[in-house]
Length: 152
Image 1 (cartoon, rainbow, N blue to C red):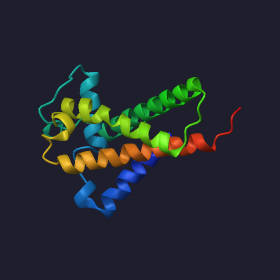
Image 2: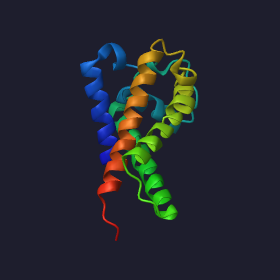
Image 3: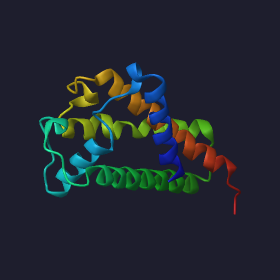
Image 4: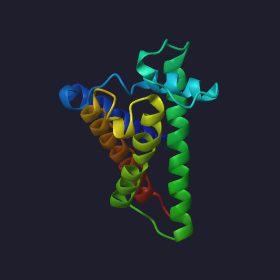
């Protein structure tokens, strides 16, 4: 959970400090919630999820989906590290975090109607920049946490 909080903090801070580079209304909790609610109803593709009618509770649905995904991806990383006998640090965690960015870039964005890498979002530069920054911060959070853990 700490890694996902790190991701969110980095994305919010970047959007506040450099809105021209990182702020986008295409990937907030509302849009993720609207998309996730559609998935739960069997809707796998949207023309543009941001143009659709809002769903009741979508910010909370989006946060729940986001944190569930973050926790699951963190557990995958921890298990892979355990099985390999390695104790990855900041570099390994950050690399993993960046690798997890393929999920939104190649799966979530196309499903939301934004196209591969958000190219049809009308805001691709900010969407991709924010996603890469956020996922790097997510991985760094995991890596730093793993580096501070004692072997037991």
